[in-house]
Length: 457
Image (spheres, rainbow, N blue to C red):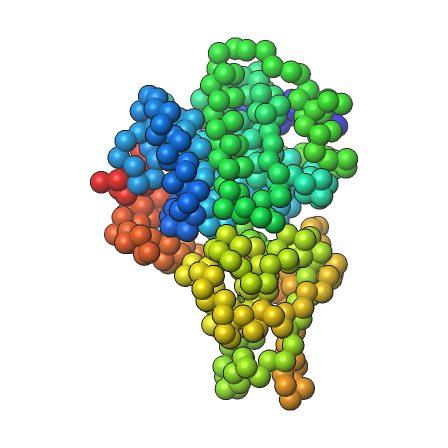
C-alpha cells in the first residue's frame, strides 16, 4: 500500500488527451450528455432541496464566475460546482460504477465545468480532467468497498471529494506535486454518510455537492503552493484507514493509464436507486409476457424478488413511499410499478400512484437475500423476480446486469430520448436538443462554453 498517492498523482499528471482511444472520448461525451439529463431530472424532482440550496447560495453573494443550470447570473466557482452537483444527483438518475458503488459525474463534471468556464480552458483539457476524476473515483472506491458502505459511508461523497480534487487539479494544469497537494487536501475533508438512503433522501445530493466544492477549493489552494499532509491515502491516520479495513490495491493499479474506468461505468434508465434497476428490468419482461397472455396483474398471488443483501439494506425497507424521495429507494414499489405499467419513468416517482393496483402489488412483494445475484469480479449485480399466479402458474426472469452497464451501454439514440424526456416536464425539449448536439459534436480544440447555458436564455 506504500506510495499509492504518489502513483495515482503521477498517472494524473502524465495523462494526455492523446492517450485516449476514440471510443473512450465518445464514452466521455455520452456521459456528459447523461450528466445533463440527470441534472434536468434532478431539477424537476428534488425541488424542495434545490430551492434551499439556491436560497443559501444567493444570500452569500460572491464573484460571478461560473454558470448554474437555469440561472442567468453566475456564481463563484465553488458554489456553481455545489449547486450543479446537487441538481445532477437530485433524481438518482446519474451515472455510476458497480465496483466503486457510487456516482461520479455529479461531482467530477460539475467541479471541472465550473473551473473550466472561469479559466477559459479548452475542451481537450476538460475531457482529460474528467477522466482523471473517474479513474480516481472508481479505483479508490473499488479498493475500499464493501467496507466503506458497511461502515455507513456514502462513496459518492467520501471518494468523490478525492476524485474531484484530482480532476480539478488536472484541469488547472498543476504539476505532479500540485495534484498531490490537492488530493491530500480533499482527502482530509472527505465525508458523507449513507444514512440518507433510509430517511431524508431529498438531502442525498449534499454529498456529491460537497465533494464538488471540496474538489474546487482543494485545487485552488494547491495552486497557492500550500503544504498539506504527506501520504494522505496510505498513512495510518489517512483516508484508507478511516474508511475501510480491507483495501484491495489491485483495483487501484491494474491497468492504470492503459484502461479507463469511464468505459466500465454505467448509465441509468430509471430515476431510482441502482439497486432497483435489475428488479425493474425483470418485472418489465414479466409484464410483457403477461400482456401477451392477456393476464392482468390482479391474477398475481405472490411476488418474490431474489436479490443481493446490500440492495435489501439500502432499498428494501420502504413499501408504500410517502414522497418521491422515498419512491426512489423502494424495491417493492419499483417492482410493483414495472409489473403494473411495464415501465418506470420520472412521472412514476409520484407517490400518489402508490394506491389501488400498485399498492396491492407492492404489498405482495417478498424480498429474499440471494448472494448469487452479486459478483463484483464477474460484473454481476442483479435480481431474480418470480411471480406466482392465482392458478399456480409461475413466471420468472433473471437480470444479472441491468441495461446501461457494460455491453448494454446506452446508444446515442437512447441517450437523446432520455435527455429530451427529462427536459419535457420543464418544457425544455428545444434547449435539450441543442445541448445534445453540442455535447455530441464537441470541438476538442475549442474553448469550453457551458453547454446548458441555453436554458438560461
